[in-house]
Image (cartoon, rainbow, N blue to C red; front, side, top):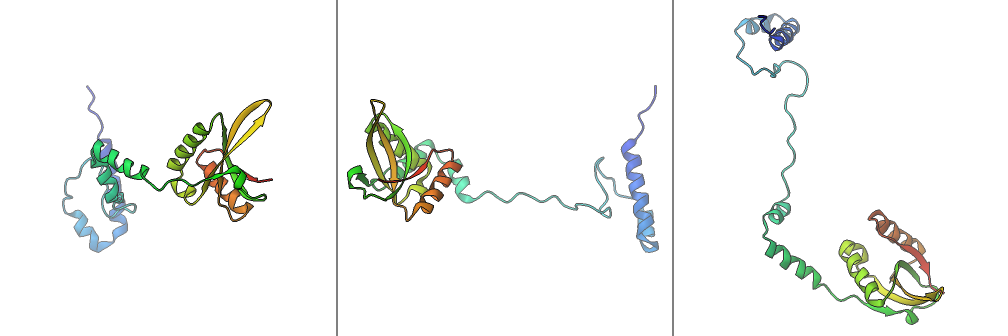
Length: 179
């Protein structure tokens, strides 16, 4: 029966020999003293490299608090968010010609368009803040549909930046100008 070769021990011996060769005469005496017993994968401190592995930053307190929150607390927090100020809806006929808008979709009914606004405003709360909702009735090919649009842009560039932010979040958006 063959005994397994102590591969790790020989690696450590080579590393220690290399360290002794580079330390000088003063350190040779210290290296001659019996080395403390190390675990199989330990590397001596005098070998160049990473001395200590960086630790990840501690989790923010709000993340820890949310993780510890009960489902009831989470539901109550969601209800308070849902109680946000009402959305201002502007009638399509009251929008002046030349106004910059963005179209967020076209839907089969006014109710479905409003529900889509609610879903978008929950996903993009900060982006939609301060924007007014416009739902315009339109017909094409004998079919009636309702365009969901947002109003409140300084210029066409502002509307394009808005659409870029929504597109980054996988939402449809087209800048338009009323005629």
